[in-house]
Length: 159
Image (cartoon, rainbow, N blue to C red; front, side, top):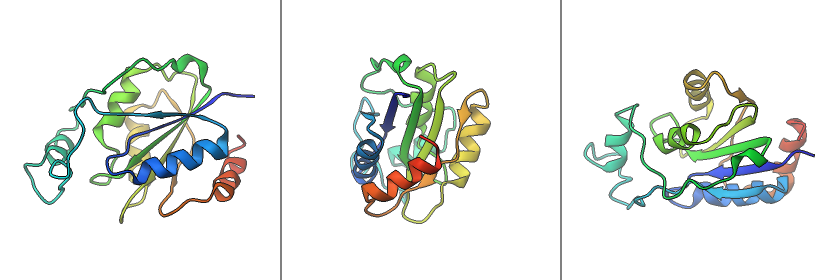
């Protein structure tokens, strides 16, 4: 049986709730991708061009540092990576996570939460940026997710 990790970044707690339920459904370990400097409400104001998130998302090369990077990634075969959709893509801290750890020979499955965007553009961009990784189709997981529904998705993924 493969060892599964649910790694997630959540700025407001929405993605965290989904990640916790997914972790239970998959009998997976849970890992929070935390920025070294936490985001404030002002940082997340996407309507302000000078907010921290706006500045970061306007520079595709920016990699916000993580609070920690001591995860033993070698023990996992499958890694779910969760995030809120920002500006139709994954937040740049997801790039920090992917570039910090050796994800070679791992199955990577993205999942996202969003107020109005889909996950398709996120998947396309991540696959383009990291073509060497083994990606499986991800899923947008909005609203309250029931463990049974997530278990059905896991069965479809053959996990």
